Length: 200
Image (cartoon, rainbow, N blue to C red):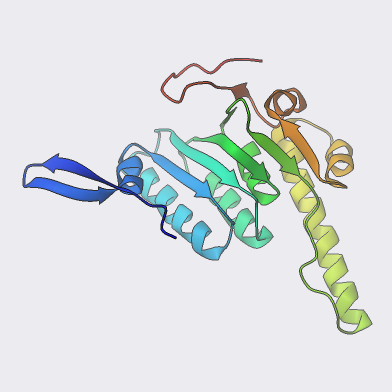
């Protein structure tokens, strides 16, 4: 099902039908919605690079409502956010879970709607079976990935690596107020239009 919508916009050539996402892009707003995979991330990386070229100093706002997804894709998006010169403000509008939580917490400013949630946990094994050596290689890679993800979250929350590893050992859900207290978010907001966020 296509959840996209079009809007009518008046131009010098008359009226044009354009996608809402395209109009949002002109206002430096992008969305991370649904599963994090190569296709979604490649589109977001293109948008981030494009907006940096348009104005290397202006803020970009990324709205997030995602259950997470691939670690490699998520880290590619994270690295791009850190590499561009524009500050990226992240706004959790529903759920930011797993790799989406990592993307959310890495924002230059991190806002949450009152009933949104963040969930952090260890990377999951997506491949089993095979020889003992193959399983060991998968296990070693998974443990290294676990360390990398935990270090990123620790860096952006101000928490110790041990704190993060303890929390990610199981699925740890944080409602907005708890996320602010733990350092996963900065503010709870009740209006997209208002520039000043509400401190908890």
